[in-house]
Image 1 (cartoon, protein in one colour):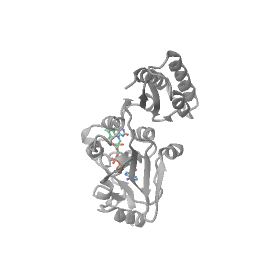
Image 2: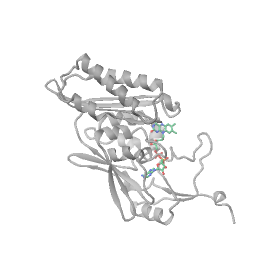
Image 3: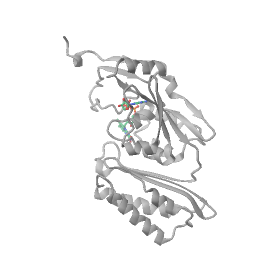
Image 4: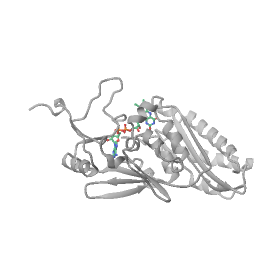
Length: 286
Ligand SMILES: Cc1cc2nc3c(=O)[nH]c(=O)nc-3n(C[C@H](O)[C@H](O)[C@H](O)COP(=O)(O)OP(=O)(O)OC[C@H]3O[C@@H](n4cnc5c(N)ncnc54)[C@H](O)[C@@H]3O)c2cc1C
């Protein structure tokens, strides 16, 4: 009997979602393959190694659709990151756009998909924190099942992980106007974990007062840092923010960092405070 690992890989390329789900059902150990740029088997610089059975999603048109609704847009999880950048400007949150542009480089974004970014094994991709802030929802489909998860449920679970036989099919992005948006990322895929982080902030003001403010940090090895209590405290506050309010906010963020299960590095702590200070100084009336 030949060793299973020595057999040539079997790659299935279904053209529809039902076909892809039927294949996953028939081959429970098969690995889903979207762009293949984050697949754990790859050792960059070496020839591509495929798992024994692969279900490739690259021909599944159902996963590349965009549906425009009145209050949301549904992005197919099989869309490449460059395809997402072509979504109508009014529907694509500008912070999400910036986060996509900060992911790899354009050739990579021609292959890399939204679903692959979100379902990376072991950690969130860089797009999840922005989608969390926007209030996105995630649809998983199985051969006889369908379920939606909110971004909060996903962050509570710590991962966006399909159950056996499931595929992430759509990401529902609510449509809200956020005239103030900020996205900053330090480090890239090759930077040590404790020197990487990103920040996203969204805010809306009216007649000099804050209507809504949201702020999230992503420290890849530690997780997400979002302080909803602090966000609520800013509602109704006058802009530009008083120095006392900004100081109190920094203190709250510092305390929230202490509450994280894995402590951030000194570098990350310093950058988080610096970015918070910077964002709060940037929010003015429209
Ligand atoms: C040079 C380089 C730079 C990179 N820079 C970044 C970066 O800045 N930020 C970042 O976040 N990532 C980065 N990546 C990682 C990766 O390229 C991206 O996250 C990309 O979006 C992954 O998408 P993919 O389609 O290639 O995923 P794949 O490799 O095809 O899949 C990744 C995982 O998701 C699963 N999967 C894929 N699609 C689905 C689906 N629809 N349903 C369920 N499971 C699914 C796969 O089974 C696999 O386990 C980089 C990679 C490289 C090589």
